[in-house]
Image (cartoon, rainbow, N blue to C red):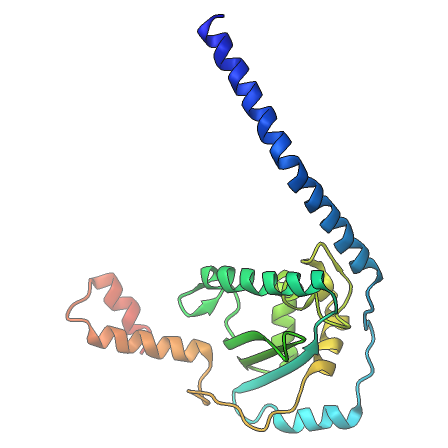
Length: 232
């Protein structure tokens, strides 16, 4: 047999063996996907959760005293092995992806977030979220919904009462009204919270950092010096 023909046969045989080896994996993946879609279509959601006026007054009394605010949220994780696996995988994915989007002191196009952290607590049965941000609670959630609703859906989509999701990252937090009502209901009161610079916004902190960095340099190019002078 000609060398080129033998090479073609080996290539085809190799691909067939690879497909036969991968077929069980594809089958398992397909079954898990169908199971996930069934859960997403049937799980309990709170599209219009009741909000206590007394609770809202307590939250309002703690907010907008300085340029920054704090949010603490505690929610239940949906039961089941698949949900437990998915929420761990989602948080690991966010831990990897978010730093790639954080540059120059900002999280992507969002310029109001000082700190945000998700963690599983209570034997992984609950999800705790903590965040410091500039401006009001309303503007903060609007910013997240407009610019990062897929990330929010990935983080919280496996939690009880979250707006209905699709394929883990679609829908969910994209329904802003339902998501904000759910987020408000899940919020807990704070005994205390820490801010390193309570009177400064993210923009002001980055501006001050750039000024200090410029003072530390022994020399600058003219264009760089002009840009630095505009910060003063």
